[in-house]
Length: 118
Image 1 (tube, one colour):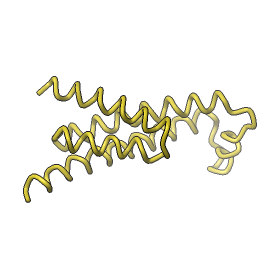
Image 2 (cartoon, rainbow, N blue to C red; image 1 turned 90 degrees about the horizontal axis):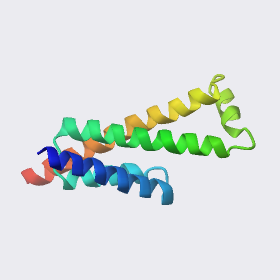
Image 3 (cartoon, helix red, strand yellow; image 1 turned 180 degrees about the horizontal axis):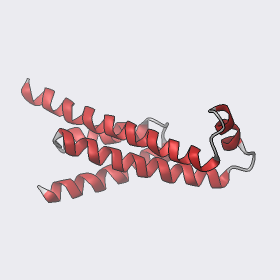
Image 4 (cartoon, rainbow, N blue to C red; image 1 turned 30 degrees about the horizontal axis):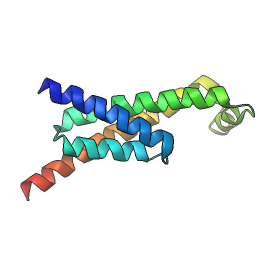
C-alpha cells in the first residue's frame, strides 16, 4: 500500500511536470486526474497527493517565470489585484495550484469509483 502511494506520487510529479512544461496550464491537472484514477487511490490520499504535487509544480514554475520577468508584468498584475507584491503573487499562484491539484486528485478518485461500481 505504501509503495503504491510513493509510486503514485512519483508518477504524478513526473507526468505533471512534463505536462506543465510542454502543455497548457490545465495539462498538469489532467495528468494528476488520470494517474489518480488509474492507480485507484482513495479520495483523501488522492486529494492530498494532487494538492502537494500541483502546489509544488505551480510554485516552482511561478518562481522560475518571475526570475525571467524583465518587463515587470507580475508586479503590474499584482497591482490590478489590489496591490499584491511580487512574492504574494507567487504564493497566490501556488495556492491556486494547491486547489486545482486537490480537485484533480479528487475527481480522478471519484471517476475510478464510478467506473468500478458500474
